Image (tube, rainbow, N blue to C red; front, side, top):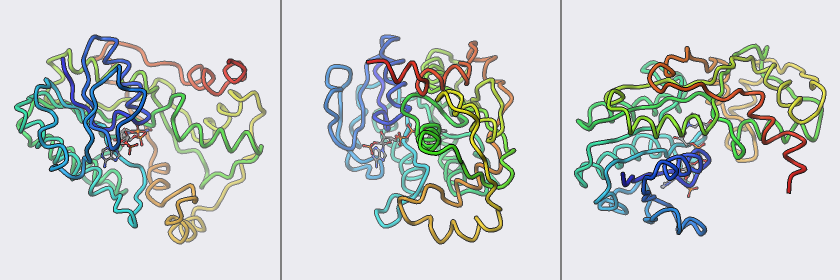
Length: 300
Ligand SMILES: NC(=O)c1ccc[n+]([C@@H]2O[C@H](COP(=O)([O-])OP(=O)(O)OC[C@H]3O[C@@H](n4cnc5c(N)ncnc54)[C@H](OP(=O)(O)O)[C@@H]3O)[C@@H](O)[C@H]2O)c1
C-alpha cells in the first residue's frame, strides 16, 4: 500500500514508519517542515494538519490514511490547542482522505477517551473519534495506554529525574495504576489493522501485560537505571490542585491539571486487543531496561 501519514516524525511515528516499511508499504508523510534524513525512506509533503488548504490534495494516489497527530499539552499563546490538534486536525485528515477517494482510515486516539471524559485531552480525542465514526470511511481507531520506547517522553522524564536525585515527589498516594505498551507493539497493531478487514469499524484499547502502580513504576525505572528504589514523598492532592493551575502555563513546569487528572483516573485495560491482533506485547521491565539500562548507556 501507499500510506499517507500525519505525525509520522514524532515518537510513535518513528516506530510506525519502520514497521510499515518492513512490511513493504510505501509512505508519504505530512510534515511541518522537510525532515532531513527521511528522504530515502518516504515521500514528504510540507503542510500543517490544522490548515486543510496546506495539504488538501496531498493524499492523492495513496491507498490509506493514518492520523497520528496529537498533543499532551496545550500552548495557547502559540495557538497549539487540543481543539485544533485533535478535532480540527482529524476533520482535515478525513477531508483529505475523501478528497483523494481513499476509503481506509486509521486514527490514533488514547486510552481513557470516552464521552464523559474529564480531561480536555480525552474530551477532544473523543470528539475526534466521533468525526471518524461518522465519516463513512472504512475506519479503525486505536486507543493505546501510555506508550514507552527509547524516545518516549514520560518514562524518560522520570528517568532523567531519578538519574539526578534519589527522591521523587508523588502526587497523592501514587497507587493509581498504569499499563504501558511498547511503541513497537502499537506500531504493529496499526500495520496489522491494515491487513485485517475485521478491524474496519472497530475501536481497540491497547495495553501491555504489566499492570503496575505509579509507585511501582518509579521503582522499576530506578532498577533499570541500576539504582535503589527512590524515596517517594507524597505531595497532598489538595495542595497540588491549588498550585498546578497557577504554574501550568509555564512551559518548564512539568505537569498540567489535565495530566494530573489522567494519572489519577488510571490507565488500564483488559488486553482484549490480543484476540484480534494475535501477539503478546513486550515485557515492560525488559523493555525499559533495554533503553534505560546500564548496558545500553555503555553501548557506542
Ligand atoms: N506517547 C504516548 O504515551 C501516547 C499514548 C496514547 C496516545 N498517544 C497519541 O499518539 C499520537 C502520537 O504521539 P507521540 O508521542 O508520537 O507525539 P509526538 O512525538 O509529539 O509527535 C507528534 C507528531 O505530530 C506532528 N504535528 C504536530 N503538530 C502538527 C501540525 N500542526 N501539522 C503537522 N504535524 C504536526 C509532529 O510534527 P512536528 O514535530 O514537526 O511538530 C510530530 O510528528 C498522538 O495522537 C498522541 O495523542 C500517545
